[in-house]
Image (cartoon, rainbow, N blue to C red; front, side, top):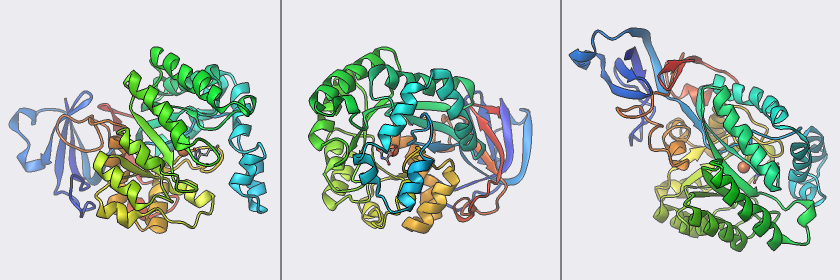
Length: 400
Ligand code: DI6
Ligand code: FE
């Protein structure tokens, strides 16, 4: 047992003024769990003799959660970046066989060790900013063995670093060249058959699909989700990123944990998400990289009380972003989310987007994943650009 003493807890819970700070507080931790938190003067006597580290009034938040990444991939897409700067659109590049497919070639060619070695520096950058839980998707393999290879690398990241990794099966990310004439065959032979295998191997925590004109239709993703439900796996979706196909509403009807991107989401989708409790995951790094001008419907999501999470979407094509703090800043500046919403978006609501009820808030019984910051106002986490005020972090009760 140990005490993290003299901290000010950044307001969370359902407090709309969520960037308020508590009075000087103590957090009692026992192994992977928080036992108690509250005003220092109320510390129960049974804890008083536990070893204590004094944080001198610093601000503490739950460990940050990056709930949407494609951080395992081979190679990079700097050349495509240059093409887009010269005017080519993301969709044009994708249709010409570049885009996702070029990352697929590099990912297939890489060994597990090589993919791990390429991913770890990106992971380490996130962790250095206080990320303690990370979602990682497959989707650059697009054949069963390569997709499973990606997920094994994701699991190895959790073994190599102090972070919880949640994996998502995203074989329905793009159609690989060898199936160009056989969409149905790809869905059955690779997406669905591979899902069953990955599930049997314990590699899949959730199933995702890219629902878009350049990817898969609502009906195709629904077929993938039906199979996931049969296996008891939760689902999530990439939807309404480039157009409004109604993917978010379909996903909500399948009780999706989250629908992600959502710039083109309409009111029907919002209502369906509100009814189902589906989290809206906004990805300002992709919005920024694609120079998108259509804003996600933040006010309508608020009005409907849809929980909003934020993530990096770290991927080689549309969001080469390795900073969750920068994602918070972008969401505030570009989407006009409040600093309190940004903080909830990478803690409480991000936990919900992953179906994790044991984290994302500082409360008894929750995981002892905590970050102490050298700031005086929690809004600084969203306000500053390219600045990391992390002072200390604890993962599962251990300072790292
Ligand atoms: N949406 C995205 O923004 C990424 N995947 C997706 O489904 C882009 C993936 C890529 O271009 O490599
Ligand atoms: Fe994505």
